[in-house]
Image (cartoon, rainbow, N blue to C red; front, side, top):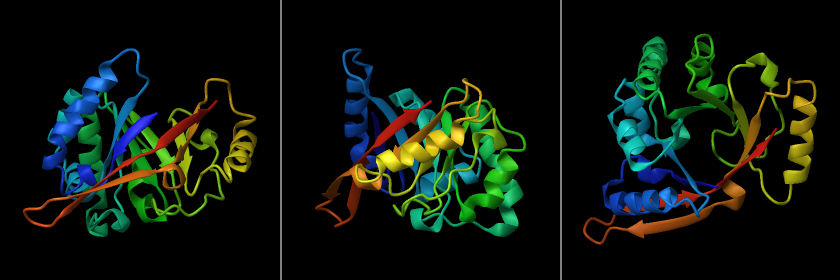
Length: 219
């Protein structure tokens, strides 16, 4: 199970440092099966687009082993199409500066200009997550074959939950049926199995939203 702190890794995160470090302590307990992942939204994603890996490095020190780069408007990220090549260079720079952190690149129509350049020269720690709904929880209906990029791990997301997981896994298995045994994919069940906690800062009235969700593997 992954614990993903979404908005908390965006603009408002400082008040959750204690919670983050507490989770890291739990994750280090060998009797507990929990892996930590961070969704980079808002200014934290913007920093990666600008080539700043300092927060990702901090997350690694806290025990996180994967981050998801959500460069979409739904995640409060501003993408200037005139700067795509620079963004790609900067993301690659960050991945190289944090080689032991898995970087999951959200793939959809909105991010295609970024991820299509990234997959041309992937780093060993890059993975792809295909989510046509841009993280809005709309049910996934297409599953691009892993053989399009056989050396890059990939997952599928979008409205996956208890009511449709059997159908989704059946479709995924059909997609990977002719792939070599070493090819591994996963499904990311976010919106349908998400636990949401909203914390309000009494001082300034701002809210911090944290999520937990499941990431399951299909091999």
